[in-house]
Length: 361
Ligand code: DP6
Image (cartoon, rainbow, N blue to C red):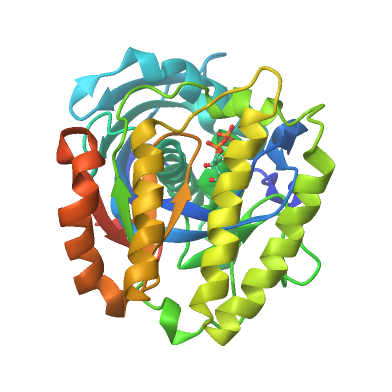
């Protein structure tokens, strides 16, 4: 599909008012998206596990206006309170999606969101937040165009979410989602995420992710600034090629269930992401001493137990510990006894792979 396929024809139905609620999860990339071209096109393909517990719930209330305005008309509530600081991001999102949603200026909207994860935990909420909002807007479009089919609904939701935040396009479906053109991934696209449809070994079923909250502060570098650092980066081309190679490697690993190889790819991706930030101009060091302490503990844990916990990182200091379901008991004990001490206020979140966003009644 091309972006033209997402421009709607004039709507057949008319809708006066209503309300819709979607709950959408966060996701954790195994092969990272870092670097983008214009219009939120990724510089390389990425793949992520959709998460389960870390979710944003968004309710969109809409009221048709007597006279359509020239501006967007919306109010924002976050966990029950007015949130003006989110306004510029939402405004920008609405501007970007306007060519694809012809009704945006016909309605007065109220957007109410809340997160399942703790306030300012340093967890990126843009993926879950933007995907939940995109889904709500698509539910309204579906009322205006009742013949819309399921597949178009899902694809376009991902397409719109991407325009809000790239990684958000991987949060609509589960359990593994690929975003970005890749030769050997069926139907992969730079425009939206698609579920990974190849064989996946049972070792990866119910895979666990414990998010170790090392630093709950504001992000040092916004992801937009971060992605821009890949323009003119001395290692950019090599890195983009490597992402393609790592996706090919993971494809084989998902089939074979080889956890040793999985660890090698996933940890190398995390460290490469940080290496890109450390070698850009300006450069950033986003790991904290406790990030390194945790990583070293994980290496030791694997050596001593032969188990398969591994880490991955976002563009920050927190650590995602990934491990197989059947090793959960020992790994959770390890977290409590040896990793918790490095988390801010001892906080961590146990999550696992999930199946994607859900519409609430
Ligand atoms: C390091 O999706 O937050 O988490 O498109 O500018 O909103 P924008 O960027 P964003 O970048 C996420 C980067 C990452 C890696 C990943 O999730 O693939």
